[in-house]
Image 1 (cartoon, one colour):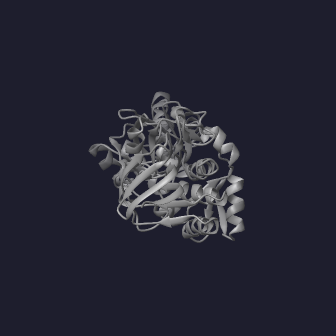
Image 2 (cartoon, rainbow, N blue to C red):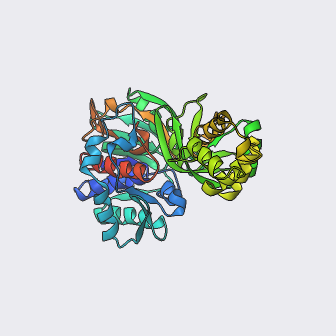
Image 3 (cartoon, rainbow, N blue to C red):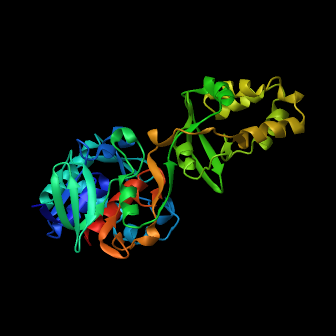
Amino acid sequence: MPANYDVIIIGAGAAGLMCAATAGYRGRRVLVIDHASKAGKKILMSGGGRCNFTNLNSTPSNFLSANPHFCISALKRYTPQHFLDLVERHGIEHEEKAAGQLFCRDSSKDIVNLLLTECEWAGAEVRLKTTVNKVEPLAEGFRLRTGSGPLECASLVIACGGLSIPTLGATGFGYDIARQFGLEVLPTRAGLVPFTLHPELKEQLAPLSGISCPVDVHCNGEHFREPMLVTHRGLSGPSMLQISSFWEPGDALAVDLLPGENAAEALMAQRKARPQSTVAHYLNQHLPKRFAQAFNDLNGWQGPLQGYKNSDIEQVAQTLNRWHIKPAGTEGYRTAEVTLGGVDTRQLSSRTMAVNDRPDLFFIGEVVDVTGHLGGHNFQWAWASGVAAGNAA
């Protein structure tokens, strides 16, 4: 006979474990299953191994979705402060590395241990190395065919994430289940991902590899003022990861290398005050020295400013304040932090995360079409959507 549970959750990641503890504390018999050998693999590698577990400034405006109002309900009912309170109850040391971005002081393992401890206290069972081969709807509930035998449940929660970082076990299983039950899955693509460059530009920027500098990058009406990192493959760093979620193939990026500075006015003032100074001198005042030198050489800016006409200075300034780059593409799911798109939220209840015409089937976390900006927002969505489903499943 199949083992029977009130709630089975497929996926032992951030959303799934949060949902399990929440449902368990309601007195539900809960089982979490995952094909991986460890719970919370993506949590463990996040934030450089220290897990940016939430953002105190997280609001619905920090999320992308074809149905932008969907996330409001869950995010309002489970806030960053709620999760911070949980972190502090478990005695986890943390720090704010950038405005609102909270990280573990020691290790991401602290967040995984918190979630597993909460599941244990709530009586929720976590079973790893368990593959789901088939999900069958019953008159009431579901039967799962797994590698360790059949299971049955009254409520089923799909929390198995998206396609990002397949080396951690990511698959399209959640989307397959959604389609099996007649749900629309919106087109998916890699988000929060580094850009690759065409060979000629990549070769030109090779001398800048490893250098980071603050920029303001624009694309499709969005912009982010954060550091950019030049790598041996292309462009990365927070600004590039952020704008990648809004970039479409073929689009150009407009990069302001001197955010807040009108380069034309500054260069003309410098030409008047110090005619013998150069563009390189100006760049050295505002950019990392190696970046300034290499970028100056790349553009062939030579000679004293007194030899530059106004039109020459305008051209230099245009390059500095609106440097146009057309990426070849992105590094794809291999290094993407998130998956854009997914289960169409118009088919789900924003209060419970359940399918509108199947209230015993839930989708939470990255598998749904809600994607946060960089900086802890995606974890906040995992906690909020997990709690919403856990309170209903």
